[in-house]
Length: 127
Image (tube, rainbow, N blue to C red; front, side, top):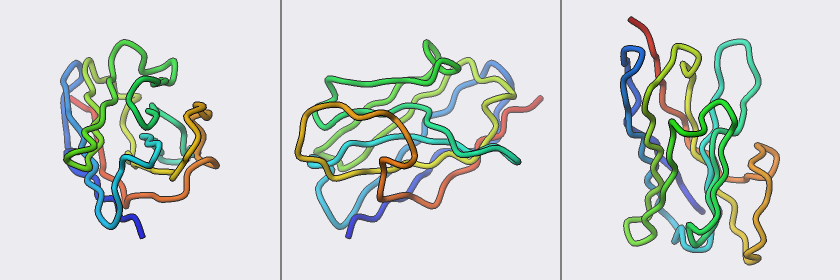
């Protein structure tokens, strides 16, 4: 059973940066597609960025393109989300998620496509 734990959230001023990490245990992330999602108060959980098994295919929500970067280190069983030029609108609980997938064909970065979820880490962007 895959277990995911996020870390790295916190309070940051607008324009600042944070790096989120998601460490996995119980299975090797090499067989999984991975994603970062977020949920702001009163809003539905939305896809932020997803990455396929070999890191060759990534996608981003329009709202974070050019500011966020997803990456994975299968040797460390960890996925990262580098966030820069943060805006108050980025305030949310951020979740990492995983889906075991044999196919190399990319899938949409949708919450309904993912099975395993972490507990979330709070990111607050405020002055």
